[in-house]
Image 1 (cartoon, helix red, strand yellow):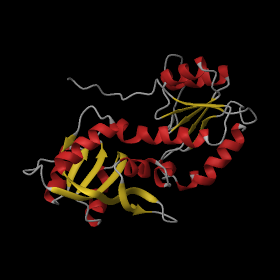
Image 2 (cartoon, rainbow, N blue to C red; image 1 turned 60 degrees about the vertical axis):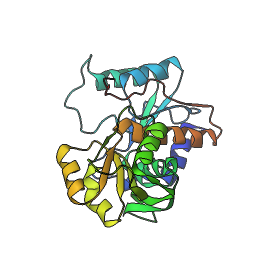
Image 3 (cartoon, helix red, strand yellow; image 1 turned 90 degrees about the vertical axis):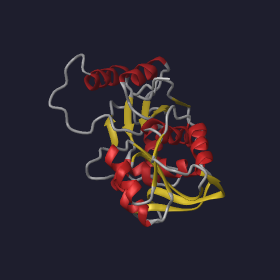
Image 4 (tube, rainbow, N blue to C red; image 1 turned 180 degrees about the vertical axis):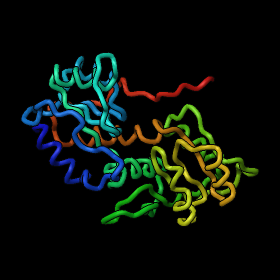
Length: 262
């Protein structure tokens, strides 16, 4: 399959027009690869290390969740990461494409994958957008489980190095309804409360957002940005494999930018 055909297939599934106005989805760098057979390296964040990995693997497309460029740079200078990525992309003929808030909304996107990892049932979006799609998912745990078991399940299945969660007096309380949203989802607390979820799994939560959740009787769990979104990249690789691409692989240089003291 040619790169142009792959992008057409993807955009029919996750339309870039659905992206938020502040976002930058679609081509970040397109050095003239549309007619080439797709050799795809999938990653969460397009970094210089990922670009170097793509060069070593002879990939011609980096397909990322996070955009390379959020705001137009005022200059491109040697030694700066974005400039170096752009220089290497044109030198080695490697495109960089990002699917961000459009990918968050769709079936089998970031939110759906997180819900599936926890085996949530009767799932609906936290914030509906169009056609039954939307941001986040809320559903039922079947069977119900204690908060303590749920925390252990999340940490194991997401391979999260550390969990931060709301102060609670009862780790044995039974949890039946859970909301999830990969990446930075603390701004959706009010919408989650309306769903009557008992627990909200997301990331990048601040001190006062934990306070807000406590005051609104919602248990907030922060499993980390990387841990809550990386699984969707793995799912994307599986979808691309079903298209019989020339080559596709999940990046091994993609990484969490935080380190936890053990």
